[in-house]
Length: 348
Figure (tube, one colour):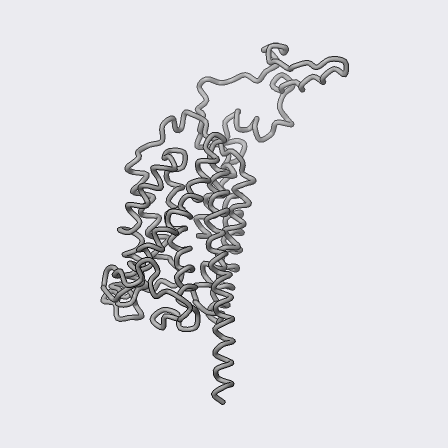
């Protein structure tokens, strides 16, 4: 009987460990390439690489900080606000489980899973200063702020003896199953503070700031959807019925939110009668008057190569521009980038 129980316990540990390793990879995929593609497609062409590098650099910087002192401050000791240096440099973090947090998986697996949460939290903030902060400055700021922002909150909510931990006698019980407080509220408040400190964006709304490639943003949104299964279902810390419940709720909730978002978008587009002439022309270019249509580009000759120039066409053939028409009208159709941001807001 003892041998059977030992075999069953070993099988459970192996299954839980396999699921948690897969969940760790899924959460990391949400940062790179998920957020990198999503944010990179929404910025201008000249800032695509810099925006993507914010996520890539944070994957490296936060990992090193986590190994040195981050994990220990978040899950070491039993203080009410912050941990101690018990696990500094990952001391005593090995294949043996930590019964205070996850008794069926190695502590190193638990450590690396929580690391992925620590990586995506500052990566979410990078959307608040996209195109406005250099990668080097971002790395320095997060290196200095991370130990004072995310790590104390993680210990207070999830750590042993934490002030907000509802499962270990916290004085202010807080239920946080998958990072609603530690990740999303923390990153949201930090992003707001960062935007207020930086001030208004230079040139907006007079300077056009169209997204570079919305295909990248759609791919990133799909990767975020898939990665959220590891984010939510993995928070059960075991391959159990609770993980299944979180998995199902995540997928059905995201699908319902997507349908509601698309239905609401159809009702927000104004009627053509309420739209300015320029907006109606952009939506119904096929029905525009012949005098407002730009003639097609001439074909290149087979004998010699020609270059098209706007001077080849008379000015009467080009559409007239209204100097009194504002660049951004409140009646303008909702762009795909705005709808993508709204979908991620509802989904997240």
